[in-house]
Amino acid sequence: MQPQIRKSSPAERPGTGALATVPPLSTREFDLIRELVQRRAGIHLSDQKRELVQARLGKLLREAGLASFQDYYRRVIHDRSGAELTRLLDAISTNQTAFWREPAHFEFLLRELLPAWRREGRTREGLRLWSAGCSSGEEPYTLAMVLWEALPEAEARRCTVLASDLNTQVLAAAKRGIYAASRLTPLPPEWRRRHFLKGVGRWEGYVQVKPRLRELVHFFRHNLTEPPSFTGTVQVIFCRNVMIYFERETQAEVIRTFYECLTPGGYLFIGHSESLCNLSHRFAYIRPTIYRK
Ligand SMILES: C[S@@+](CC[C@H](N)C(=O)[O-])C[C@H]1O[C@@H](n2cnc3c(N)ncnc32)[C@H](O)[C@@H]1O
Image 1 (cartoon, protein in one colour):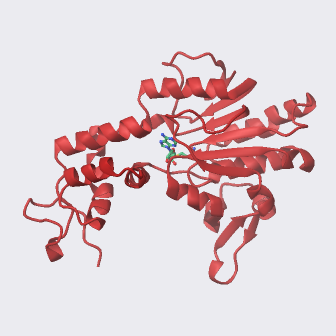
Image 2: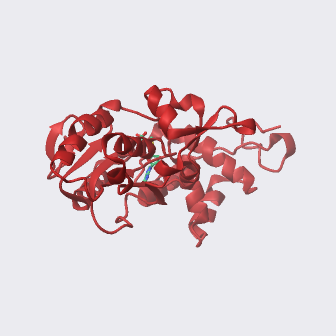
Image 3: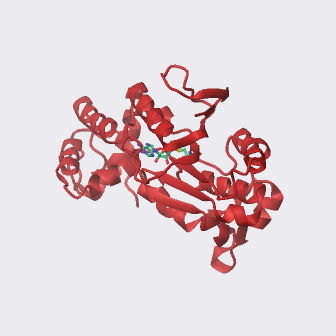
């Protein structure tokens, strides 16, 4: 049976049989961990996240047979391979996402931007889009579907959706492109039929994104607090519901990087609960959460 995660008394320590629960997370230990997460991933952990950190990292600590969060912290910072830090960041990040999430952005691309660029001949050589903080792939695959629907097939096939995230586990799932069929509900019904293969046998109830769309999407690990790992520019950046976890200084830095990565006339889309209002930047405001270089 899985040990229960609950606040333990100091007497309860790993390795004591039924009492093998998570040790308490002291204020000092929490501060050490949040400083590390802030420095390495830009993610700000407020005081309210303390229980979440205790629960999520407690699992890793138990697996490693460690007695305290201080021991766990030491293990992470002394691991030269970086694998422990990767596991920590995987455990901390919030990966909630969906197909066709915040549809106004996809409608804008489908009905306004891509038709306009097509008329101007800007799509003939294909486009490069970047889903920055792509989680398990629903956002970049929705972008690939939009390209497929808005452009002639030959042009769509020349497009690329760069899809990056910090979290290695969601990236592995995204590359497989397999989802519970129920997750397709937000998509237009004909898109569900056109762009997915239905699972059979032990895959009953699951779908997989068709290979022709998967070929457009290139997943890679990238930390947004670091310089981009790809060369050249992109015409569109989606970075939605990611910067919400960053402090203002980190947000400003990331926005500057996005500006450099976009071609002139390129577009930046951010999440509906996010804004560039309090940041200094060079983007033109188009409408809420949509900006142009
Ligand atoms: C809430 S999800 C948003 C997914 C998608 N963009 C959407 O709106 O549905 C936030 C994602 O940002 C990623 N993330 C957090 N900090 C990051 C960083 N420093 N660099 C890259 N990705 C990061 C997380 O791993 C997570 O998958």
